[in-house]
Image 1 (cartoon, rainbow, N blue to C red):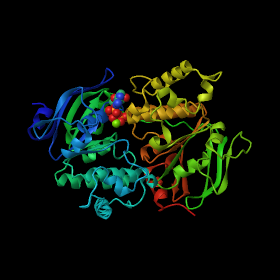
Image 2 (image 1 turned 120 degrees about the horizontal axis):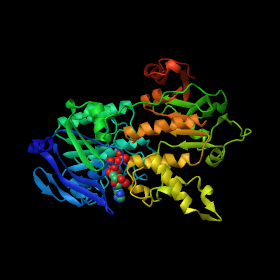
Image 3 (image 1 turned 90 degrees about the horizontal axis):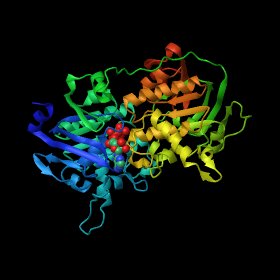
Image 4 (image 1 turned 135 degrees about the vertical axis):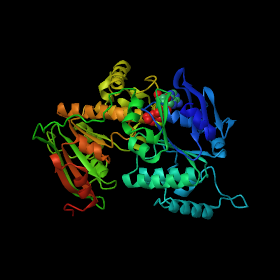
Length: 510
Ligand SMILES: Nc1ncnc2c1ncn2[C@@H]1O[C@H](COP(=O)(O)OP(=O)(O)OP(=O)(O)O)[C@@H](O)[C@H]1O
Ligand SMILES: [Mg+2]
């Protein structure tokens, strides 16, 4: 008996022969497996493997092209999300579905409002219930706060809370941890274990093999829309899972060897950068061709520093000197771009890609001038350039004409990175560049950053992934509470020392 048949015995959900085509392109191909009642099933696969699409079929967002779903042994037809919710299935989507102009509690109850007998909204009841739930989930978010004012991690918490408010029997989470910090991930896992104890079944999508190992009972691997395997988690190690995902035997998560610092030329010199209540006298320098890391806890001021350098925030004090720019002040992002600076924001959805634009349009958004001939855009040149990036990063898009909204999350990130590379920067700031990127593509991006550095392009990598900072950077600034707590080099770049500075056990800080 195969694993899938075996689990069908007490399967809460049986997925049978699910196929999905978009415009003749098959993205899911006869996928069959079962989810056991009360388990946490990991779902993993490379960017574009079909994970989100499968989830959208289970939750009624897309109809399958073929195949069926059985819930508690009975075939079900799920034409929309409302039906899914009615059946006890809910999800935390990969790209958030919150309404920015509404308060937290209003979002949590959206489409599910509590009403008084008179039919009017019972706001106090909703507020109270939402507050109770957020507290029970150990999620420190105020119910009256507008969603637009929340951080990405807080928005995630609201999405989880919204899904849980429905008392679902099957909770599906599509990459819920990409925007969370280590501590928040621990809280989420504790919550998942609580829910499991209460009999909730979960599907958990993540690119982080360690997380899948830590929290799941079994793991399903998808590759190119096909089911590759369903395994008991104790029977596979992280490398086994990675190999199944990429379909090669030679997988090693390695970083290219670090190159000794090539140049002493300082290309960016920041002194005493300050923003009231946010940054305190941040000073650092970046050298030509160097890969410089910025580590620290979320909220330590790394993103704000980058935004101030790019002219996205106004600093109250300090100087930003760019080599060769003759001391010109950066007041707007356009000034920064014209001085050769590029900044890949951590907020891909909010500040990055344009959902309605296609792949070439997204890539040339900033560098468009280069593609203009006599007031017209040279579509051919634009398309050829896009094709280059699609090849270099193996961007999975059925065609260049596809709106970005139809690309998988990880592939959207690759397009966004391409856009900044196309500005031909001399200084590239990458804020959480591999968020939502699968292990294989990560390796490609790391190699690419090395190539850039070898060409003399200076890179700053802001990352909450310790491995990434340690494996990639030749020097690391650690920030804490809006200030630089320390700078590490060579053998000092290790987890322990970074944490020392990040948490304040070590280091001066004003
Ligand atoms: N509405 C759509 N129209 C056309 N193609 C689509 C649509 N939705 C998804 N696709 C395509 O289906 C494939 C699978 O996408 P999916 O979002 O399921 O991947 P994924 O496994 O979730 O990847 P990631 O890890 O990057 O989130 C991709 O090639 C994507 O471009
Ligand atoms: Mg996805």
